[in-house]
Length: 85
Image (cartoon, rainbow, N blue to C red; front, top):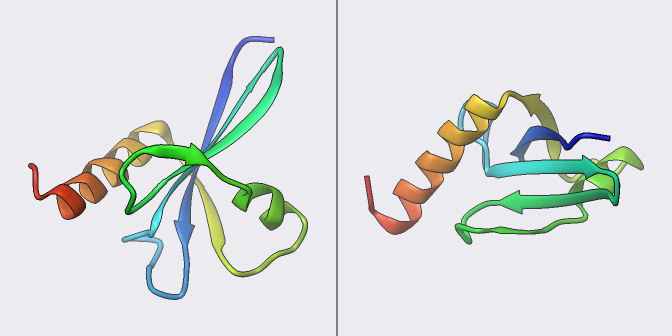
């Protein structure tokens, strides 16, 4: 199976769909799947959020987004956290 990556905007109590708290991505390949999040610790780290959301945990809302939207959110988070343009 070729790699498939699905992106989600993470919305919590302190963020909105237009300004999400972070980005979640699920990468699927022949080895299985791996979920990672990018947030205010500006790097990709392993995340259990998608598994929890799939099982009904309502702490965060996840909205599927395009790779382009994900890249825009990541750029904004980096700018906010690091001060770099």
